[in-house]
Amino acid sequence: MGKPLFSRIAFLGIGLINSSLARAVKEHGLAEITVATSRTPATREKAAALGIVDLVADDPASAVAGADLVVIGAPIGAYAELARSIAPHLREGTIVTDVGSVKSVVTRCLAEALPPSVHLVPGHPIAGTENSGPESGFAELFQGRWTILTPPAGTDPHSTAKVRALWEKVGATVEVMDPAHHDQVLAITSHLPHLIAYTIVGTATDLEEHLKQEVIKFSASGFRDFTRIAASDPVMWRDIFLNNQDAVLDVLQRFTEDLTALQRAIRRGEGQTLEDLFTRTRAIRRGVVDAKQA
Amino acid sequence: MGKPLFSRIAFLGIGLINSSLARAVKEHGLAEITVATSRTPATREKAAALGIVDLVADDPASAVAGADLVVIGAPIGAYAELARSIAPHLREGTIVTDVGSVKSVVTRCLAEALPPSVHLVPGHPIAGTENSGPESGFAELFQGRWTILTPPAGTDPHSTAKVRALWEKVGATVEVMDPAHHDQVLAITSHLPHLIAYTIVGTATDLEEHLKQEVIKFSASGFRDFTRIAASDPVMWRDIFLNNQDAVLDVLQRFTEDLTALQRAIRRGEGQTLEDLFTRTRAIRRGVVDAKQA
Image (cartoon, rainbow over the protein chains, first blue to last red):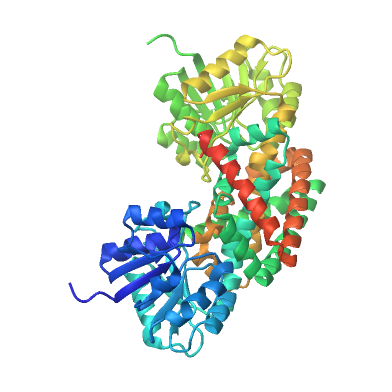
């Protein structure tokens, strides 16, 4: 086996995604040493007990000391403070990446806070489950999935290539994209679906107790898929909506118009309108299956 | 082995649900003989080739001749005509049930069209997949799932008990419910989720081609769960919405109000409102998991 891809990888935050990546890094021998930290003491203890990384640091500054790759895996609202706290401790030439679900705000905020001597290559692995915490991660999470990288204009191509290599070695396929375009695509594929799932499950929680119990009991008829999505990490998702406001509000507007049209068709008993739509949507499912994302 | 529960079961329609039930009936020896029919000649041929039932009949009238149990598994819009066409051919004391997803309209429509000498026990197994057609069914579909029965007031309890026994023997747990109450619960757990999934996938189909391809490519981030739901049978779902109009429009109204409130919170950057809701919805997921419906 040759020299590992990185000598020291620091994971800031060790939740579902970062703990999965840390596990995969160990499994594939992609770093000489791995270190993680978390704002929450209990999470740091869990990460240490699980042996996901070689070292657990008490704070971000000591975690990044000597690292040639830093992977931020924290709620987006914590990025600015995190970046400021690590900035003085980063070695020249260190690559900083992240795994956040919104890229325009993140790319801008990190570029502002980090010194010009580091290489910024923001990233987003399109993978996950509804579970959170270091105990939920697993090394195979990224296999056959996409990772999108959004390096700002002028980023050192060698750094982008190294981050790409990391993701490819843990099983992902990498695509480089403009951050704003990423946010527009993800607003449709991820943020709106989550918003809607949260809403419908919320609507059900407001029902009177007896009806609510029956909704849970008979959830296998469609509702349970929404409850799975709506069980995702609350703080992470709060920050996604606050930081991809424009794209989410735009796609939400289109969705609401389409839903209103459908509501009108139901009220008027327009069966053909319903059948036509329901037939069109089947074709999209075939596309998803053909693209091996099902 | 004792005498089977029924001597002759006739399946009117042999799609996902009825073909699964027919397979389970064979597997558990619940009928001396099974017969199926379908409006579509190709479906009849498939059912015969697959050997799901003992006999395939050309039309409903000949299928029900001599049957002591008739199971209607057709789009709800076809019920009235179907009931009229079989009425003169039903033996006295035959039990007629169905597997449709709406119960008020169905119970009323069947009660009107069928002769008073037959026993009507409408039913709804809360089980399914996004696939349709006789080739998609499997005998284990109902194991650990619920089946709701909605016998009208005055139905012979012995007939209800026999239909209950049938579902229990194929692995389901049975609950008896008022049809209107069934329709209200299912409007939330099933009809609204499907309507929303159809809408969001429809919104995506209207995007310009390049963006649409990327939505499919990156669907693993939430969207793909909606495409699975939105791949369900179009005619079946058209009829569900047309026949559970009031309950669906009522719950849709609540959902839209809740979604508008969330939209407002995003626009105003009200993080606490979002986090509070996202935390509440996690509890519902735990309820679903505890109820073993996940």
